[in-house]
Length: 191
Image (cartoon, rainbow, N blue to C red; front, side, top):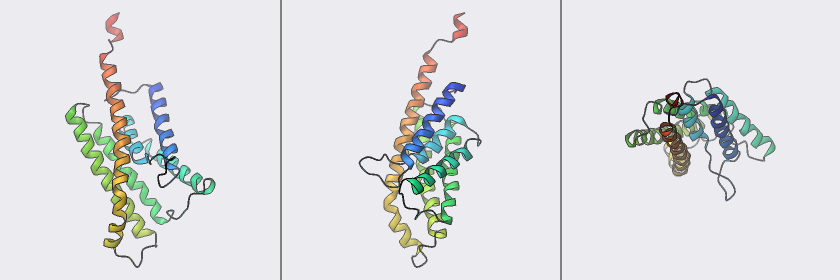
């Protein structure tokens, strides 16, 4: 695991927050919009920082970005229903996966375990988020859960692909940082 110093925590945490802000302000991709990195940001932040202290800060940041997108960016508020609160357990799923992944090594087996974990957590998050929207939005009173699931399932590949892409890039950068830290001579050993 990469050991973060005060300044690296600031830069990495800031970079992850900027990634969340840059990719969350819209709900569907276009040629000029990046795919949403929110799930990967929750996973990677938990992986790198540990604990639950930063979790509520990211929840607030995601909410502020959504508020800004709706009130200043012209994004529809159609998704903001009582089901919106189900994003908290959705993101907690990825946060928990990040905490579990802290116990993996950066080796091939550890990377495989992290990949399986992030995949399972992302599918679970997709189910939690969509179940919350189905149950609490009051838009689907005349639609069965099976019909709703069949309609939203087409979004799972993109949901999964962007989370895996951003997480893989983050894990790759982490592995590079770790190998660089391990290859540097220990400063105290040189004295």
